[in-house]
Image 1 (cartoon, rainbow, N blue to C red):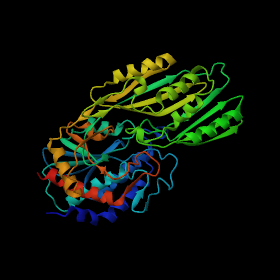
Image 2 (spheres, rainbow, N blue to C red):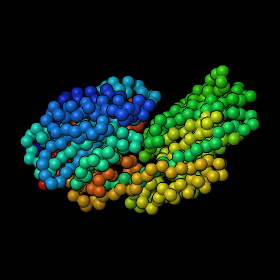
Image 3 (tube, rainbow, N blue to C red):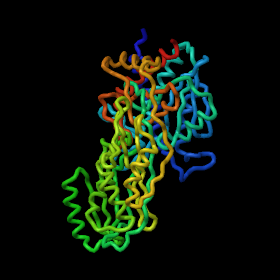
Image 4 (cartoon, helix red, strand yellow):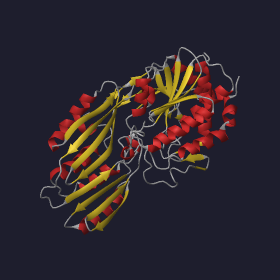
Length: 467
């Protein structure tokens, strides 16, 4: 029997070298730099090109589809196993102790954007596939290692793949956590538009900015206000910071008082693990006399979104016995006195809830504040039976390499490429004992965890393609 852990350890040096090279590419989608050649901006395409060049040198058949998505292929057979990873990363944001795009290993942990989501896990799965190929394992299925370049936004690349290439038979995405994610909640964003203006209120909200992406809990929020009592506001803010789990500062500028609140970023699928700087800032501002659209914006954040990730204040809380709770992340929250405001509420919903029902629930509150609600694109809940052979095979590989005999398949709020296949799941690489730092400052993965995940992927892929 093959010692998969020993095999993975032997790949460690080369794996880390290739991984670090990919992590140094700041492959954040940038629509402002998009061109016909680079529809998502040049950096995601640069990462795709680097990966495909590496895979071609390693002996795989490769294909680049429109600088949006690509794949490395090996094996033959009537069935296709797909391994779906992504090369794009979230914006770095602030609060890092190291350069997010200059990876470092400290105390056994690899720090840098993409270490955990998804370059580290993706490359571990790729190296597992490469090892099996190099060892001459006879595949009875075709394997395609498919890499997208905008998983953190709207999946343009992977949707293109499924438009122009044959659908895989089954597969997994190394873009979540172990043991196996066999269910993913549905997703939808409600986009709220708030009227402009302040009316004739004594305190004026000039601007409010918070959030980088809909699927991140905002770490920072900045507001600019005008007031006749700047010293009073300054004193009040000092007390507010002392009494709440946030940091912040306030300064006088020629345009008014600039107020900054620092919370804690987290993945939008688990918003309760973050500290939403925007709603805390709104909670502070809500004590003052605002008017017009500014008043509606602040009241909605402070009275309905603050500390409510389960929609209790909307009378919309819901739990499914299999798929769990409905969750909501307020990820983008902006206001301009002249242009109005915008709020993005991102929902992860189990079966039993629909996007239309969520829209009606939010409109019941928003209408009272003259806030317009529009429903964005949605994805239905996804579930693969725990008795499906792919779930059972992946579970066994995880148990064999970790000894975790109590492990069971799980349902999560995150959305991975796995849901694009009827028999698709998410599989690693975050270990149950390791903190989840995806979408946060100081993102990291323990190197030992990554090597263990490679061993798990080796056994899993081997068993899937030689059964």
